[in-house]
Image (cartoon, rainbow, N blue to C red; front, side, top):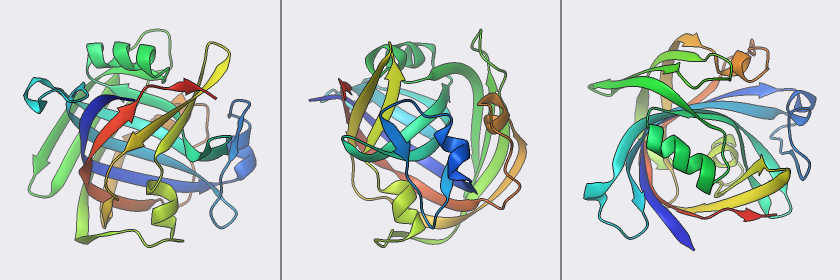
Length: 227
């Protein structure tokens, strides 16, 4: 049953290929690394969450805030999905509800997101206590026209997933989301500060990231269930 409606806007997905063993060591029991061309992938994803509200409630009462996450790609009993290492957001209530309703590793942060033409400047400073510091400062923009991802491409592997897994209370949970297929463009990005890897116990990859931008999708999410 759907419990939340929201809009994801100005989305950057910056993805680095890494050795699958590096990711496998950080996953909970019940999920395994999913690979593309023999590589695991770690993606930094800054974007704006717009009009987050209970399902079937008018968007006008929704909450809007920035979000920043580091994620990877997995398979599990329910099928292929996403596993989040962190989700930072600058909305105290949203963080509290997401941690309770979805068992996701959300953390409070101060964020500033500005748009100049097509360019998005995204800055984040984690303020959540008891967890590693995390600062992020980047500017990104689309290059060219948007189109849906073709089956079998890296873009489809990274984006066309409608399920996430999360571990909490010594159990593995799974959640489902629904939205139209992503419309994607190539992207340019400049990373001035990126602590996502260090804050999550990874070495920063020395490879060039694969960059895509999406203007966004409208999303509904179900309550998580135990796998």
